[in-house]
Length: 122
Image (cartoon, rainbow, N blue to C red; front, side):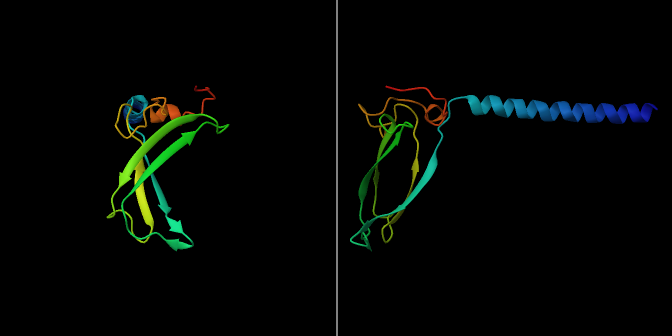
């Protein structure tokens, strides 16, 4: 009987450790951290890929009604990143980063941008 009790106690302790790890990872995830995603595209003109060249891209995320900018970022991409018109770049920067477009960007964190909480931003 005591062996069964010790075995159950071990399982209980293991369960508590797992729950503790989950709770700590949730707490860390809720802190402000840059949330990014990769954007890939192909630049075409007249049905042909644009030659490898440097370019400046402006990325904007709009609200559901598409009438309010909730995120705006501008990036210079050098010619080494663009290959036969195909490019890939990371979108997402912390508040105050020079990539954020002043005057257009309401300075929301990426977590707030993607919260999908129905809050209207002006």
